[in-house]
Image 1: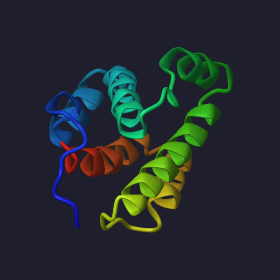
Image 2 (image 1 turned 90 degrees about the horizontal axis):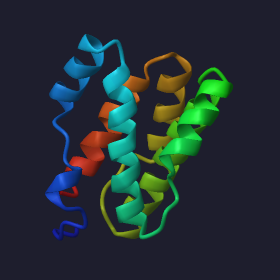
Image 3 (image 1 turned 45 degrees about the vertical axis):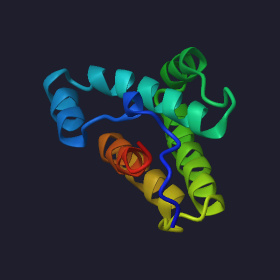
Image 4 (image 1 turned 60 degrees about the vertical axis):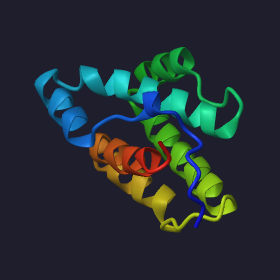
Length: 121
């Protein structure tokens, strides 16, 4: 397993705090949380793969369906990066994110992905 930290500490979000803030703000914090995860994924991938404004607009227009797709895409990209860098990762990470998101548990999906991102800070 690699011990280097490819993400800076600015990409770290405390998961319990994120969940509480999502609940207290009626999930408005979750929009910000996704923005921060997009920044972390872009830094990790070394390219602007995740763009906030198009994601937000398409998520609104499609009544959240685009967000479900993006949760799967993020899980897939995160899994691929972790696997390629020699880190241990659950091979079902993208499917876990998809299933949780389809069930309306996107906050839990974000928490799972944040757990993986936090290990890289």
